[in-house]
Length: 170
Image (cartoon, rainbow, N blue to C red):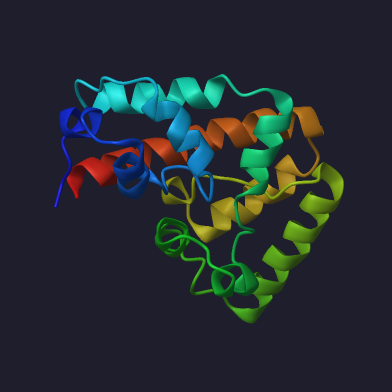
């Protein structure tokens, strides 16, 4: 069942959180901020509210949001309660069908990336396959933490776009 943005405009905060709570991974505080930017005339206006919320974060809030994301291809993250959206997004890239060699590569890169930058590697998995993601992990590992923080926010924006579209489509 799809939801009209105009209907979301009229919802209570609790209803909005229920409908849109997973637009940002394990970060209902972000959704709450977007709710305050009503009305939402259409899907673009809803996405714009989420986008403005994302772009208004200070550095501490950005790290909090980035840190709420799971590691890629991490069985422990799935077991610990990764959102259905993240599970589907990672599956769309083939991360649920890794060989043991690929799984080991993801684990090693996840660990090296987190050790260097202090937060998980984030990429809009829907736009890539597992080989492209591994390659991106390798070259992005060499970047500065500031560059990666900015890139993580950009990737979260792309993920948000897909999640809003899915929400509107039902």
